[in-house]
Length: 67
Image 1 (cartoon, one colour):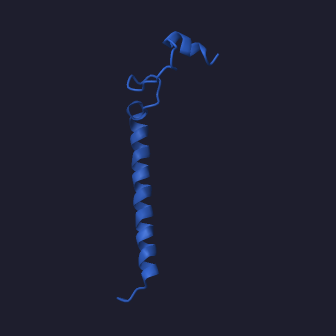
Image 2 (cartoon, one colour):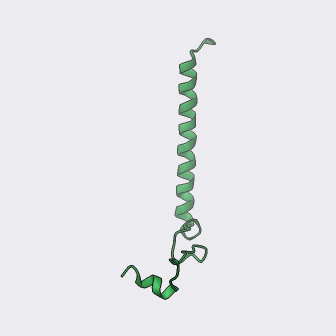
Image 3 (cartoon, helix red, strand yellow):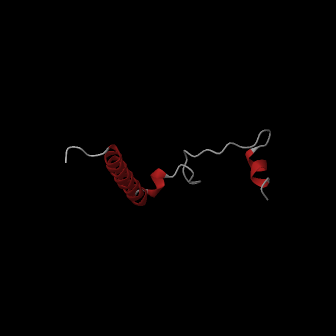
């Protein structure tokens, strides 16, 4: 059993990496579910998410551009 082929070893390493990635992804998903307000930088209610107004426009004018 000590003479495994290189492809079998690489395949096993790839499977292990995929399982670790899935475990990390599940942990991140659970973290977002438990604390949704902390993990969302694009949330408009989040004071840390800052959207830059278009050049030369005041904030009031930039909100009217999309209308």
